[in-house]
Amino acid sequence: MTNFKIPTESEFIEADGTRYAYRKFGIQDGIPVVFLVHFRGTMENWDPNMLEPIANTRPVILFDNKGVGETDGLTPTTIADMAKDTATFIKTLGLEQVDILGFSIGGMVAQELALQEGDLVRKIIMAGTSPESGINPNPEIFERMNRHGGTEEDGINDFMFFFYGQTETSKSAGMASLQRIFNQKKVNSSEQVKEAQLQAIAKWAKQKPNHDYEWLQNIKHPVLVTNGVNDVMVPTKNSYILTEKLPKAQLIIYPDSGHGHLFQFPELFAEHVNSFLDSNSY
Image (tube, rainbow, N blue to C red; front, side):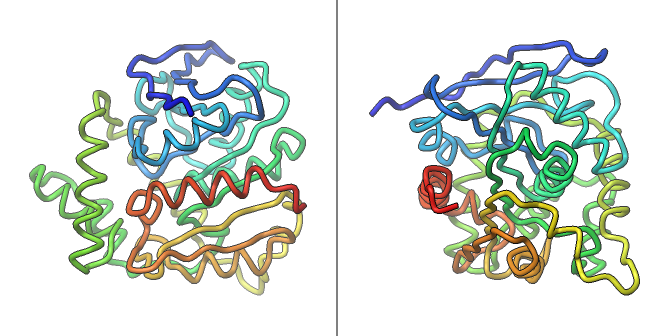
């Protein structure tokens, strides 16, 4: 089997006045899987140990959405607008159908994309994410996400707290993943991205009275929902809500892990993604 390496240089494509940066690799045939990254992340924030096994079986597309990383423009302040920009990028590539892997805020965008452009999407993986008006984390999480300043060590400590469990096994696997990501990082996101995404998340998280997540019934796509057993960023209860309310959802919960379960178990997660995307069960 060919082992595809992740490109280190980006390609660019113009769409509606925005110059989108992306990297495409993996096998050439088949339905591509488009990755939608977490809060403040760029396309360089994916663990290569998770990406490469997926690229060995299908085309993989990483990209920076509007205003993020190497893509110009301003990041919008709603999940709905982020989904519209995602659809614009995908269509501009000339793709008629894709699979979507959305992690954290990327999973929120994936839900909106499925509602806006149902025919564009075949299957969805929603990792460490929540429905609109889902179960919110402890307020301390938002305070730590929103604080300014601090040292690089503070940033690493926050990341480890947000993404991993407090056991030695989880923290050790998390640091190993973080090192793999650091080894490929060249571009970071701006303060504008942070502020816009925080606004978008706050609007998404706002509680609605007397609702039962009925809009999730309109996402008819096969969905794989994944999370760690104790996600402090996006409480794991949200994954159960998604699985219960989405008509064609299945759930995998990873042990001894949290938000960053897909990086803590990169090869196992990739195996589960490939199995789900290859399945003809639906």
